[in-house]
Amino acid sequence: MTVRAVQVIGAADVIAYHSARHGRSIARAIAAEHLRADHIEEALVYPVTTESTDHPGGYRGALDEFYESAAARLAAHLDAGRTVAVISEGDPLFYGSYQHMHKRLADRYRTEVIPGVTSISAAAARLGRPLAEADEVLTILPGTLPEEELTARLAATDTAVVMKLGRTFPTVRRAMERAGRLPEAHYVERATMSGERTEKLADIDAETVPYFAVTVVPSRIASAAPETDPEPGTGEVVVVGTGPAGPLWLTPESRGALAAAEDLVGYTTYLDRVPQRPGQRRHGSDNKVESERAELALDLARRGRRVAVVSGGDPGVFAMATAVLEVAAQDPYRSIPVRVLPGVTAANAAAARAGAPLGHDYAVISLSDRLKPWEVIAERLHAAAGADLALALYNPGSRSRTWQVGKARELLLEHRAPDTPVILARDIGGPEESVRTVRLTDLDPHQVDMRTLLIVGSSQTQAVRRDDGTESVWTPRRYPEN
Image (cartoon, rainbow, N blue to C red; front, top):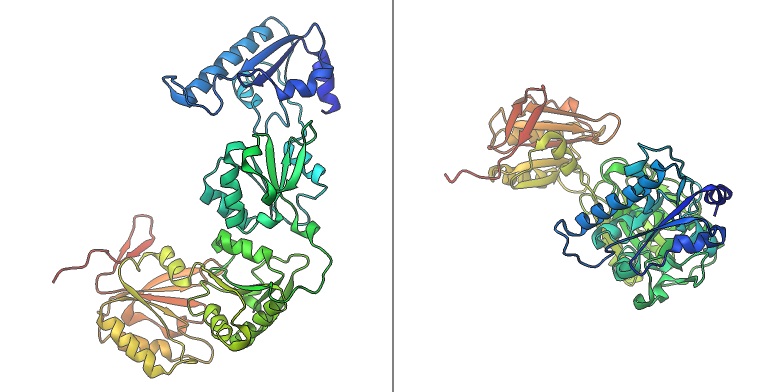
């Protein structure tokens, strides 16, 4: 308890506290030595906790009625000129029962809220492990969240505390395991109180877990052991897609994999999108050495390192997943675990900015002839255009490739009307983002570079200017029968 809390309790006329129907109050037990014989005590006993109720308003209705009644009892003391101290374990405005009194009384009576030490701070102190260091992000989660939500948030954050365990413990443990955080997680029960227990979360029997317990995933930076030679065979390679731009396009699973990696391997431009983390090694390279990057990543993993290969967009779409898997298929690397995590690919990002031009069947084609002959590209463009598919065209042009867009336009005009909508999406998600729609016949190759993605509509694609001046492009899901 804080010094100020002790002072307020000593000066109060009325001491109020919440409890379940068994009548035992943790808050009262904590403050017991500071209570006087002449204190008026108001025990605010919940009518329900987790069980069902026959209240006409259901569980929420029963609680709302209780809060109104409890507030009215405290208001009667306040109207009589008495000072009321509502005591709450932890901090009164952090998942605390007091907040329901505050919402009903603080606008009518002079109120002072005394901050307290939360179970989170107490748990970290008992573990002797920092919660967060440097730029790490701490996420606090109630165990009552759905398992999928818990898993996603645990995978995405640096450090975490999950509260409200008890009956939620099996769900929380599964979420920790699915997010890959179970080995890091600690369990703290009744921190700083009698019956305190701290263990590794993986060792806890679910049947023994009370509500007043938390699980802590502490700072990775602070927990990092001095660098030693890893054990051969314990490493893995995870191929991660960062999306077309910055953190907003990164999935929670990918964010977690990047944070957990000991080594990051990738094209320097993509590595620059990943925040620097103490203890991580970064291996940047040029964008034309994909096989060499893959081999480096697998060699590191073979030596026991956890490696993330960083790719733009989705790693499986014209990106690094293929290069890694090709090298991993060779004899020296076949035993190395390789995982590929999906990302937001440029076609989907560009389509979303424009509307829904890929709302029906579509094809994805790269116009780069660096790894395949132009004749193959032309044949595929003919086939896709002839089938009346919308097209997402990757790698349309660069400083050394200036004629492919013009050739593609000529070829497509053999199958499409001149006014077919074409979306020029450049630097989607980046500081120079632009999205324009032109007619196919007006497509200017000089306005296309390597940071541009083209989406060419089908015969059914619509482009409509809206009242606010923006243009929406979409391809109907229903196709004409004739």
